[in-house]
Image (cartoon, rainbow, N blue to C red; front, top):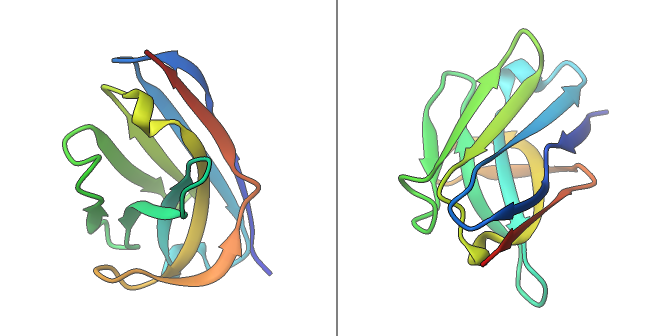
Length: 120
């Protein structure tokens, strides 16, 4: 069983920054690819970024150059650093575990999500 707990969301002005964290329990963290998804109101959930256990990363075109993803395997934690935030980044952000990258294959474990709101 894997549990994912996201934190770090909040309200920020456009151009600002936030760092999201996702703490994972369970033994699979070190072997899994970790990812961040987001879902805005009325829209489908979309993959934002992913990182393999070896540190290979992938990003959605909409966040390239603004977001970075990192992980600390010793702490079973994955991070999403979001800079130059835009109002269109407003969404609930979810952590996810899976395998592979390009494409990332979710194993179906989801956290409760953390709200990010970017004001203009």
